[in-house]
Image 1 (cartoon, helix red, strand yellow):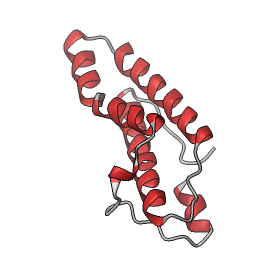
Image 2 (cartoon, rainbow, N blue to C red):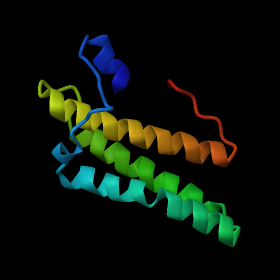
Image 3 (cartoon, one colour):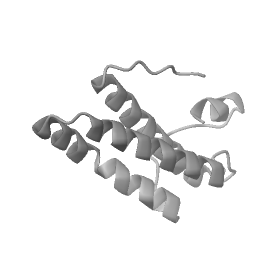
Length: 110
């Protein structure tokens, strides 16, 4: 998503994104699930049940996929675009962190 924005010459600044623009149910569900990441890691480690992280990452990927298919990211509204790119970036970072913890490599491009 970020690469697509850059390829079209659109400025991408996720650092100063106005996250209050993320107000639809898909986005709010993603934010809530991202907030549960530390708890899933703690639960998996304390209970010695790595499948907790695997299930969390699967749920996150499924929710992101639904959001990605339902909403446009490359929009004229720069505030909304930055907020959506920030959320997509956060999902990508959590996926990368979780896969790394599980010892799974993640390609940047498929």
